[in-house]
Length: 295
Image 1 (cartoon, rainbow, N blue to C red):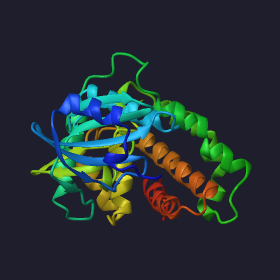
Image 2: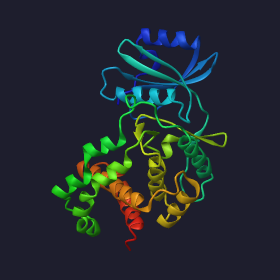
Image 3: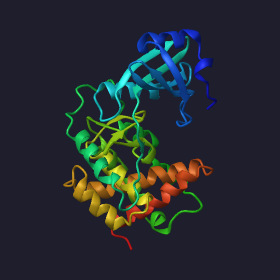
Image 4: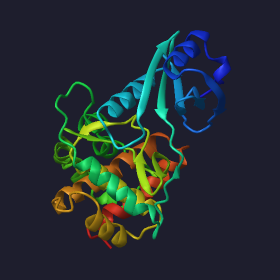
């Protein structure tokens, strides 16, 4: 996405931000964030503010509105200072956090702080209504990865997966039913969306916030541990010892691991040029085989 510098934003946008922040001094651009058309840190009398923006007509603008709604719901992340909508732009202003992206590698001291943040999230009450956040189960239902893969299997398909395609497609509805729920879930936890600040973890970038079962983020994060180099046995042991909902039924965990494999395998098939999809598909295969106790 092409980036727009602060001085190139419409005057009406900058004026409206100034009304919220007061006088603005130095502006430092920020390059991170693939869905940002503008991003930077504003030096204001009230402290530093991180802003990011997108054009109101961009089809991804819903991600900004979703992220703002999650912040208003009180998720464990940086505080939302303001939302500005002016002159065909949408900007979000956030509490600026001096921190670094988390490390998920084996032995990382960040893991304990991430576990604490997930326990804080799990302690939240279920969402009161169903209008603000879309259903994660519904999103996966629309994808139906195993049903699609069974109809048109990729040429390079793991032998174990190929032998179980019909079984995985047949249990897909049950896996999606288990995924449904009314708890707020991040659904996109990885190193770049976990910020370590003064020995605590903040969950950032809630663009994919969804209604889901309360255990979803814990199970998704465990796959990311495998991707970060944890042997499956160690990732599983750490998840059960430190993350919320360790009493989740083993069969639900197995079905969900298979469904995650289906999602990544389907994405890798659809977009063969995206190396991340292929890599995550490989990690998800290892994780699913581990929980299915396949050598």
